[in-house]
Image 1 (cartoon, rainbow, N blue to C red):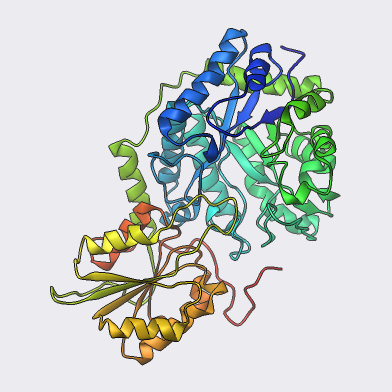
Image 2 (cartoon, rainbow, N blue to C red; image 1 turned 90 degrees about the horizontal axis):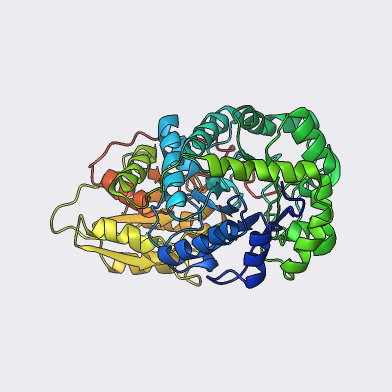
Length: 506
């Protein structure tokens, strides 16, 4: 085992690894790299990049480097550019099928191996306790520990049986706050007994042999003041001692706002002293210097765990992997079809050849850095138009009012209207538009594209379906349901708060 190994997980901009990174991998100092979607513009470019990292390790006689990436499926997929679009965790929860979740893990592993990556920052084991949370939300399998546990374990099994290390995140739980650690420093003031519910999926993952656990930057005063990532009480006493975890502890990205109150140099060293094995630098500057700073506090136990994970990769009998195959795309569509849920009424469209269908969309940008989805409206429009050519679209601009949108819609004299809502809880125009169109004699079908929390503010909508995400298979599933090509079999994997209660984050 090299005594030079640093607990640093480095990152860099662009499609080519800097010389200092390649040299560090070759001489054994750098054991791990995190890649982001800005590191490549194509799958071939990603393959070339990972090949250069593996080649550097081989030149130095080192074990394979740990190459990590966020490829959860659904809301957060660092690899687009032709990788299979997966519906995501809440959609999996809605299917009720852990077998689909295991196959999802298999598929994710196959695609990552084909691209040279061997460590996936997935699955999310947080509970969707606060549905308004954009940073957890659809990334959770559900809001009950039992559901999250069984689906999370299935994905872990699927990933690791195909030779990719899985990461349970975000320990000890990001679900109890609606605030985003990318932009704020959340504090969860629940007692230990209350926090135990959120810990249950992590306990089960540890017992099932998950390779890695990622810490969260949320503060839990019940354990210790300050972010969990910097807390020895949480990473060592709780995770290592109480839960008995002996795998890799990886921090969430250290450039996030929740840990910015400490200088980067101090924060990365504190994380190692707290019990982290790999400190994910994210977008921090001066990473070459930070590697040295972290190496100075990297202990022998941490080095042994890093090397054990690398050895596991080296010993894996995993094949070369495959990407975006017909079977992979069929799996994604099967998940989306089985997840789509009729939440209210009968949303099926009865269209005659001369009928006019109008789609009204409320496109939004990414509400958090943990969102890599593109504009969904064209996918849904295409899916509807491929079934009924007389389909038009009305896009709700940010400055448009509900009354103005309703007037524009009625001028088109549509026979049927479909409204695709996104984050309706924060945009009162969407619920108002439903009521205005109903008053005008139109009874729109509503497709909730993201959080089921929209149901609470769309109480007047008579016909509502949930897709749990905006990936292409989910647009196709919505169209299939509207045109009676499939039956709705999905069930809500979360409980909605009583409508009379506030839904804003606390």
